[in-house]
Image 1 (cartoon, rainbow over the protein chains, first blue to last red):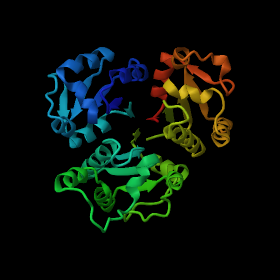
Image 2 (cartoon, rainbow over the protein chains, first blue to last red):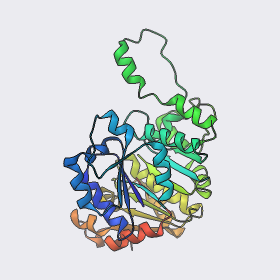
Image 3 (cartoon, rainbow over the protein chains, first blue to last red):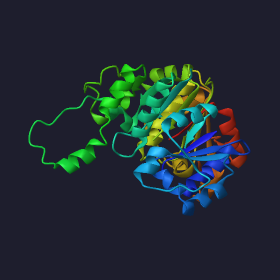
Amino acid sequence: MLFLLNRPDPAALSLAAGLAGDDDAELLLISDGVYLARESGFQSLSSAHDFGEIYAEAKAVADRGLEPAGGCSVVDVAEIVDIILDNDKVVNL
Amino acid sequence: MATITITLLSGAVEDENADFALRLSQAALAKGHKVNLFLIGNGCHLANQEVPWEGERGMNDALTAFMDSFRLGGRLKELVAQGAEAATCHTTEYARGTEGCPYLEGVVRGNVGTSLTRFLINSDVAFTLG
Amino acid sequence: MINTVGIIIRHAIGDERAVLGIRTAYATQAGGYPTRLVLMGEGVYCLVGTLPEYIQNMIRMFRENEGRLACCSESLAARGIPPDELTFPEVELLDRQGLSELAEDSDSLNLF
């Protein structure tokens, strides 16, 4: 299951934790959500839920001049297409 | 080849969801996948042809260039020309008084009962954005 | 392939997205996709007081067409809404386990 988050709101991730349950889940940060990819915000992501992977959309990161934390993979839309199709469902938080 | 359906609730400018949806759709088409876009709520505005202002705009070049980054109309038209399907929820257009406004070429007047359910039939992934 | 649909509404009726979610749930259920409509967060306020008649009827018809109406029990509790005061009878109450089952059971999960 792939969760999309478009705003820097860690509280939204509690819904992800509830929906994912024990199933595998990945998180894709888009738009303002990429602010959580910064080192200072990244901790809140991994503590909210045990995401298999955390991604940040490349254009959103570049537009904001951010340096994502080491554990966050920066991906472009072409890669995101594959990520979406690899997950059985996509949920926009 | 897979089919992705995106139900888009956001309009062009209010946030970046529409821009992301169109870029994602472009990437999916480039990979040989199929894309359906269902435009509902403020998303229905993406369907409309632009109505240019003919007079003095009163915007300097820098402001114009900045605001140009929000304009999406041409990109949806290109997606449809490349094989994406785009349909509106005409009910939300009616509520906005835009039901009779001309559509970008290839965008279809639709509704949630037939257009979206038709999109879902062959979709591998379907999600809402906005 | 998509055979089942989950619709989660997180907004009260003053936000268009609540109406869009309800209309979409009705449409997918009527279109042959077993659909669960879940109110959570501020969305649980859709189950309190009254709704516009058209929306009230749409939810009623959704249920008559075997659509499943549910809400998040945590969201009710956080807002001091007793389950026995909900506008619609026999609304399913979902706890965390129920939410994850909803996600598991829905081929497409859509948040409004």
